[in-house]
Image (tube, rainbow, N blue to C red; front, side, top):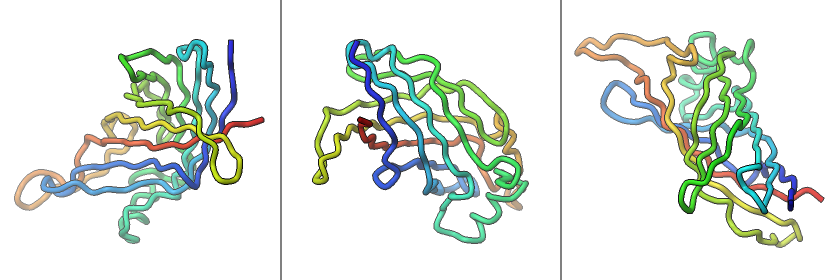
Length: 177
């Protein structure tokens, strides 16, 4: 067994999402503070595991008023639920890629999600001598499943905020020695 520990490099990682706004276009946003670790078993990748923590207050949709609303009790309630958490429960090969199943906790509610994962990439040494790898992952969730149910009806019909949330992660890890 060749196991190694890797930590998320927050300066070279992103956690982003898209959601329908006013039934017409997608709004893009992300979280600017994330941390976590990967226990990588290179001899049997299915024995690997990952944990990640996102600072809910670091949400950024490039619109300050919307971000303030998203931090409020109507949505993430960052005072009560300061983090979003993911802990893998199963890693499976899916062709050249991986399928990572795990528990995602948002707004104090934990649900199982499945991430489609590309990677990990081959190890590379950065200009400072650190060994790095990367992954990209995607999934979709329903925000109401996590208690994020605030909405407003539109005069012309429909609602202000969609329920389907597409999540994309691009994460670089630094090997721990």
